Length: 103
Image: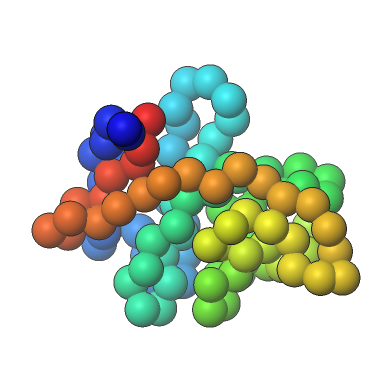
C-alpha cells in the first residue's frame, strides 16, 4: 500500500508541460500534464543519453527528449519503437485539484 505525498496543485503544472520533484534520492522525477489534464510521473532522465525529459515537448501521452528526439511514453516510461529502453514510472493521482505522488 502506497503512502501519498502532496507535491503541488494541478494548476502548478502547465498544460503540455512539466514540473520537477526532487525527492532527495534516486534522481529527479518529472511530473507531466497533458492537454486533457492527465498527470504522469517518470524519472527525469531519458534512457538514451540521460537528457532532461522535463524540458521536452509533451504531445498526447508522450514526451520528446530535447537532446536527441527520443519519444517516451508517459503511461509506462518506455521508449517508443524503434527505440528501446525505459525509465522508471511513478504512481501519481489527482484528488480535488491536488497532485499526489506515491512514496
